[in-house]
Length: 133
Length: 202
Image (tube, rainbow over all chains, first blue to last red; front, top):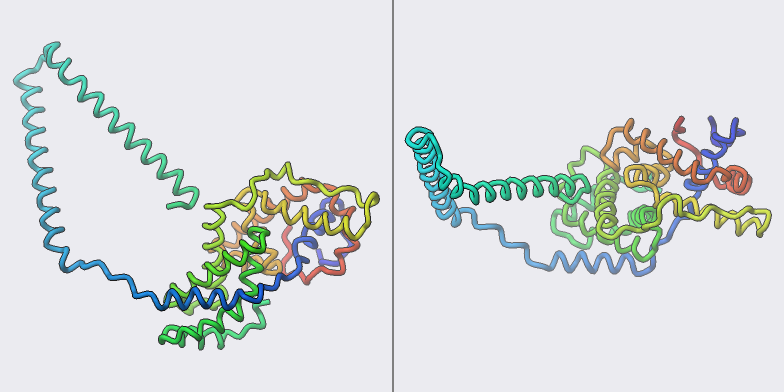
């Protein structure tokens, strides 16, 4: 359909009217001070010293050390955990009521951690959808 | 609009800015201030805010000038960057909170002065664009900003043309449903101001 052709139906006419209205918007002329104000901000930005880059070289030994400690901690924890699991499953195959009572808070902590993790993932997903992340 | 602006001048100015000549950026601002302020205006319909948003877009362009890879034209890069800036600005502080159903439909022109009625009607339609759901609003804004050029709008949004066309069709459909009597009200007076269409949807 050409722009100035006679609309065939009310449906086409409505679309044509919307096109005409939205396409025929008057041009806005920027205010007289816009250019000067923008250039002033640009000059200010140019005059600012560049941000100091992160000292990767200096931080490297510390980061390597931290990573090593983290790996060691993880390894130790895994060993202790594995040992405990083996003890529970083999040496104490039947948990006593006292043991179950002692494990109950740990269960709640685990549930709370999982719930926190899920809510964090959900919030991240929502924020991502809205373009915040 | 941008068609008349020299790509060569843009390239030269960008080279000079990247070589350390801050003042060369003024040429870029001078050439593109009109299009960017008008684009921002279509996003928010608030003159003061449009200038603030356009200024922010120029500042981001200044910071990221080295990121223009020259595969696309400077205008494509600048519009895409500006669209990102405007989008995030409006996400932080939305332009309108009025639902589409609450946008006032223009009164019957016979009861008013025709010229005034026409202007009010146009403004209602333009404001209604801002009340469209986000995914349909931007394609509508950019399609008409780029003089009904779907390809240019899709480049600015960084979306495939098909997606832009589909969203545009839906956005226009929502507007048509909101203003069912629009064709009877302002067809004659607006016909003379219509710009040439580059692509017709549907």
